[in-house]
Image (tube, rainbow, N blue to C red):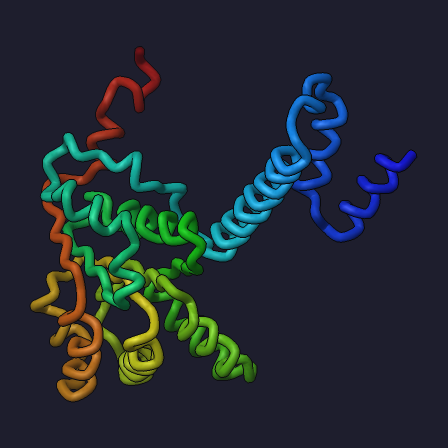
Length: 251
């Protein structure tokens, strides 16, 4: 009866991991051989693991990553210009702690989005917030937020997210509202949070794509000069997978 009350109280206090561990201990015949300190330590460890796992799942859900990508699954065999030592350094998340950015450029299909999502996934696993969005949808979301009054809330969210992934930047020249919105977003994040940008457009062409020279200078100064640059090359990975026997259903 006492054990049941203890389990109920643990659940009421939302100590789910500890409650599960305690219930398991009650079913283990040899658990009495452990000291009180050892048993209590096991309960605390389970609660800690449960809480961290729940937090990571929440961060991944909020990140809205386009791909279920992780650092461990990156393909280094296909020649695409990926330096494994650079990726492993980025996997430590020190670049986030040092408030640095990552810029990934290369032709379509070479894995820019996968790599960007893998870095954001690693950030979430390290307990840091992340958010993925394609540049066209970002500009559309900001325009809608300005129209419906949610602009301050959206900009606050973008400013505080530890790793913001902006994919497909530079698909089309920016108009005046778009370049001003991009500057505002980058300015709010400067020195506070890290940004990952993936683009088919080489960095040397970004200035022309942004348009206004003054705004372009301001954006590039805040975004590019404090960034790790990953330049991918090669043919589309999607085309290769489509041509492979496995992709076509053959063994």
